[in-house]
Image 1 (tube, rainbow, N blue to C red):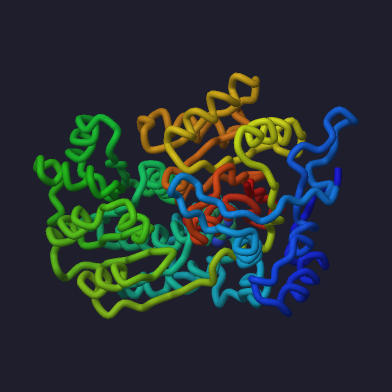
Image 2 (spheres, rainbow, N blue to C red):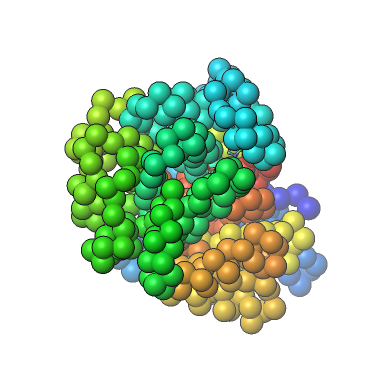
Length: 441
Ligand code: AMP
């Protein structure tokens, strides 16, 4: 089946861009979009049609007023620009040549062995540049996203550190429960046989087992700011031995309103500590936090979303109740092996997953109203291929490492360009080809 492709490398899109470039947006004509328009329902009675077959169906550009939600794509022109942006950035990028191999880093033999067992050979750009700085004890600001290998970038040198300084304790703050669990899993795989443990301290899970685990004096505590603060207030978590702190996805933590908890926690740590700060974006709030809590940090920025070079992006012109029908139709295609569907609200995620299940499509959802365990179960089922479709909100999916997602479908439009890039970055990872489809009314 020929899928309606909007690959940035395709001659279609570049030709259209050149053409559009000669006029300003007020001069836009329907033909400008016609080649991207995918019919909402392609002749189902006359045999099944590939959703990418363009039959010239074009609806006039119109204002999208999504119940007060001013989506990024108020006009189709904006949507076109938006969807084209991610690959354009990538095209300008030169391939990165790492300065080190993992064998070059002065890791202890047992740690080297575990890295080898994971099959890592070459460090990713963020690893290549941050590992030597962290090993040298410097504060680091790492501007990198999920998929960049940032987790190993801070975990590996910190594992080395705690092996050399046995009394050292490391605190890792992360915005979501899932990300905390993921970091702990990665830690466990690198730290196999090294004789120390980590624990996860996140909200939404019973606090009592966490209090108990803290009594065992774990070397790494990985948690969400709200729960960490709670544990500190209950005197279950004493940070006086913690000489190292990592803030992972700091921008997300700010977005989620954790700023006061973060400041509270950092304020209780000793001043002469080692602080590592990771964020996908840099804004005023982030800069303020860095200024207040890091000492002469080295900033390392890796180019965004290398992976989106592997993502074919396309729009499907559809709205209202037809969206669900279109979605189920798409999901019948065998290529949609592991599909992540993005919606705007928690309620919407729950509802859509249920509707899909009723159509006998194996689907589950992750969103903020689900319990910690339910979210983990859904994620694991998706990872193991037990569910074909995971319906997610932006916040719940942020930072998750979900391998081999075949398709990302933006069932609801993302709120911002950043969200769009984050969403499509869930597919096309580690050199696999991925597809991102955006439903546009
Ligand atoms: P992260 O950005 O930390 O979520 O990592 C993304 C994915 O890349 C994870 O599945 C890692 O296990 C994997 N990964 C990280 N570093 C490397 C590396 N140097 N070589 C191969 N895979 C890696």
